[in-house]
Amino acid sequence: MKTLIIIDVQNDFIPGGTLEVPEGDKIIQVINRIQDKFDLVIATQDWHPSNHISFASNHKDKKPFEKIEWRGMPQILWPDHCVQNTHGADFPHDLNMAKTEAIFRKGMDWQIDSYSGFYDNGHQKNTGLASYLRERKAKDLFFCGLAADVCVWFSIIDALKEGFYVTLIEDATKPIDVNEFVIIKEEIKKLGGKIVMSDDISSR
Image 1 (cartoon, rainbow, N blue to C red):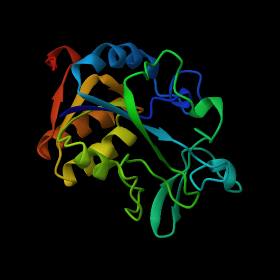
Image 2 (image 1 turned 60 degrees about the vertical axis):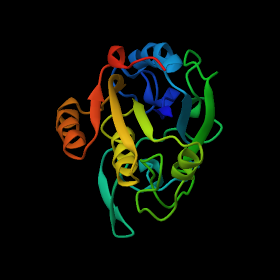
Image 3 (image 1 turned 120 degrees about the horizontal axis):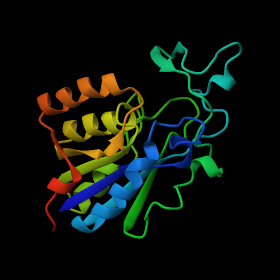
Image 4 (image 1 turned 30 degrees about the horizontal axis):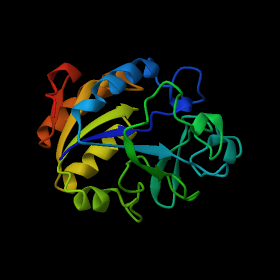
């Protein structure tokens, strides 16, 4: 089953949001256009409590994008973003969600960050996404969303480790750091993943 996984396309990650990805809004029309090419469409959603450990505002004298160590793990401090039940956590109004069969929320535990749609950053808890995909007999996963060099990348790593066939849709994702994305694309190919443009995806 050919499956599209939309990673964290939320208001706080597009221009005007608190943690905007440059040109993040440009991928919305691409994602809308390709959804009919897939048998299954699912999405992930950052869904943080306001006291989340990754927010710089919850650390005295710390600023966004500083790095700390938390419970033996490196932690980037972010601006407050995707706080539960806020506009910033919502999906953009122009993103077509009609075909989305399931939404997997992540980052709900205040004590640990969760970039991947499959696991938290410490791989202590899983979201249930892998089990859901296996139950639906979904093996061929296509990834899109935000940000290419953070949550999309970590989701792809875990999907490959879980044994899925993985493809990144390059024009349906945007990175925070363009140079980092160049490196990541090479890593995806080395790990056995594929990279395509949206026009290269065949219809069902």
